[in-house]
Image 1 (cartoon, rainbow, N blue to C red):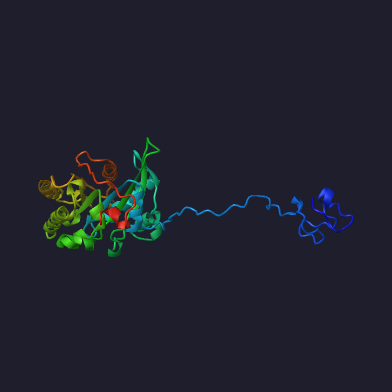
Image 2 (image 1 turned 45 degrees about the horizontal axis):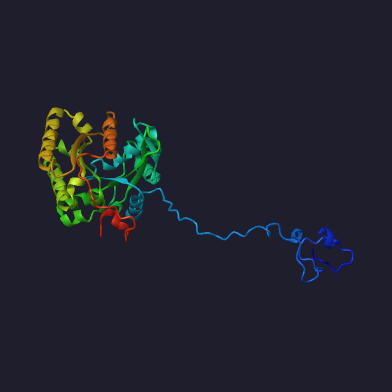
Length: 335
């Protein structure tokens, strides 16, 4: 026990200071130990050394960049979808409708499990809300600067809460779509196209029912698939879905039968030219946000469901995934 220079101090026997000091008593005799009672409360506890904390990446809620998408691809298996087509063909509206249907719980066998881009989904649907003040539902188009950016959504099947699937959806701006059609080098530069598991090509029915525009729309669709076939490494690994979008322009037309027949001709032409070029070829007629009819929700759900399935026609890829690539872009197949 410590000793004190004060003659009547009981600290040596009871540990209590005569003057009531709890610490730093000036009368303690040098060389004696400080009693436990006079130490700070936490002085007897083990001092914990700081340890490096795990680095977490927080997202803004907007569309993912190539770097962010690549980081996600390296971490877990991801389905990457590219939507392509001319301006106002309905690509953004189609993507917006997917987010809206998940919010409403419209999907029958698929459940929403999370998203890193909720703000982006809200933004793409904004002009279709009452709060936006618009007179008619609308969707803001995708601009050039949004090339190779991605919506993210994680889903699970209704009967399986453990198995979750991540989906990245990119919307190729209309201006770049036309440049891809005309220049092979531009096609090769599209990172999302080179990495995509599924390509959704939108053929605008509003143009197909116009006698002055239908042949151009038909030709551009075929030329785009031809460019993809040339520049895409192993095109047989790519599943292609051709969507006749804004189908309400056909179904509500006075010449409905003639327009349906012309769309069938376009479909048959694409099927005969590219049926064996890709891993699979599907065709759908959709109207994501029609003016006077109900949206084709069933077809949109079917398209989304197809993305989650592994096509048996796709060849087995023997190249192993690079777990720690030198650059983030390596996850997109670049060297």
